[in-house]
Image 1 (cartoon, protein in one colour):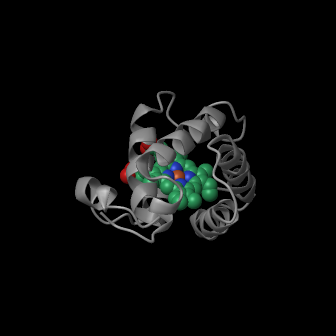
Image 2 (cartoon, helix red, strand yellow; image 1 turned 120 degrees about the vertical axis):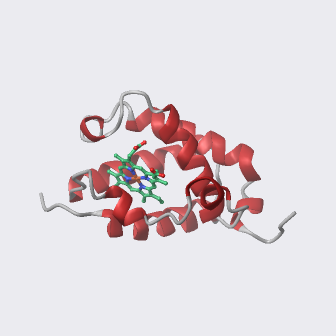
Length: 125
Ligand code: HEM
């Protein structure tokens, strides 16, 4: 068992599951995001649980199932504009609150995800 990671500090996989469900509930209802996401988010939810587990220092579940993340490359098929980046981050900000991830972790996680979200943009407005 790993200790001292962000993953452990926020409550492990149970908290990741809460966060990811709270997040995709919003994504699935967001007018800017609906056009690029699949209607059935089951697989997307599954992949994001694996990814965020390893992103926050937990076991490398994503790598085991899907290999190297290559996130920017995996996002190239979708037009990710600044508006969509903002929408994604807005859904995440609310999901962090709903999942009861408290400070200082809430801000630390949001800042880490903001850097990655900026890196995912591939289309001008
Ligand atoms: C997949 C959109 C940012 C992690 C996807 C998919 C879309 C998408 C449309 C495909 C869903 C599917 O095939 O199931 C966006 C938008 C973003 C964004 C609009 C705004 C900037 C991020 C960030 C992360 C992330 C910041 C990670 C911190 C992932 C992962 C997948 C994914 C892990 C699944 C990749 C795979 O294994 O196929 N995203 N994304 N995304 N996204 Fe994002």
